[in-house]
Image (cartoon, helix red, strand yellow):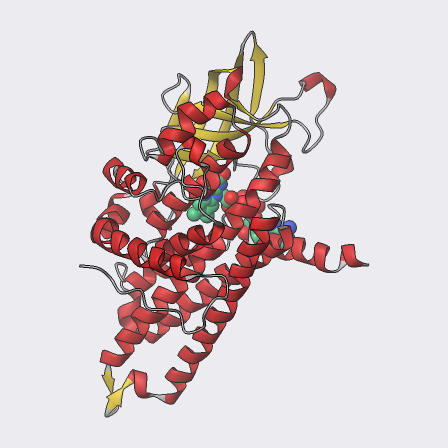
Length: 396
Ligand SMILES: Cc1cc2nc3c(=O)[nH]c(=O)nc-3n(C[C@H](O)[C@H](O)[C@H](O)COP(=O)(O)OP(=O)(O)OC[C@H]3O[C@@H](n4cnc5c(N)ncnc54)[C@H](O)[C@@H]3O)c2cc1C
């Protein structure tokens, strides 16, 4: 069975017939291979390796990665379509597990990894044979990266890593972590950003401990806390130059934020569609709830907001493809889309009435997942700070 990909009511000028055909095949694949199991994975806080391999075999884990690394090097709008469709699955855990793997974790390796790191980690990750997690946040350092305290000190040809990482998506089942550590000389004094480096640490190295984090959102992504105690890795595990981590994070965060915005558009779209189906079937006051003008107008407003947001997000993707440092555009896309997705989920929960408050209601999960997306990958307040600085301060 193939799933008809209903076109959005407002055509995106960025999407061609090829992108829409791709949407059709992605939606069919996700509905057949992922959707039937997603609820079970959310309950079990995991995503089996067979699912990763299936995504890899379908070419969906390397759309944005170069052909030389096993990816398909497709234009950004193939990723836009894929991420919207991932969002439409309605399962935040699956959505972020996959988005983080392909657009947040492996992208550091694609951008700056050595040939050896690409061959050893990126290529198998694109195939779904290995899964990556991004371990940056620490107990004392979330929004403010200047407070990161994990270290890697040199010992011969090795680096010895010590630190604590928190809220690591895919942490429960990842094979390796892309992590941020301080590599400056402790005696030279630390500048807030200048001695960060990015490093690959395999899960099975001595000194790595992974503990489940009981995060209420994105359950299938097996969010975990990771301890690093005297973990010895070869110096060749550095991604890019030593002490260039802050710039790498700033660059990669734009893709991360764009991806979060795109998936939020898909999630909001699916939430509205599911709610409309519920309203059409809910008889009340000699009609159905979908016939009530107050309800119709609210749903119309939310759909209009969604389509306006989609255009903003698509424009941000277009900007990103031309300049990977499109900081304002990507921040606006992340802010607007994740906040709208939260509003949509909360309003839809109300429109479901009491049924929306069952713990296992899809819309209740959508609320938790959407709220988390306004914090992860840069909280909304941080996005607003960035936008105000670029939009006002820097323009005089
Ligand atoms: C579900 C989930 C998954 C995550 N996955 C990962 C992952 O895979 N890897 C990883 O490294 N991290 C991950 N994180 C962590 C995430 O990146 C941080 O939560 C985020 O950077 C915010 O940091 P914090 O939680 O420490 O909040 P804090 O920095 O303590 O901020 C708390 C709140 O204060 C407000 N705030 C923050 N800064 C400002 C400001 N400048 N002005 C005004 N208000 C402000 C915001 O409302 C913010 O939510 C995840 C988080 C969540 C919720």
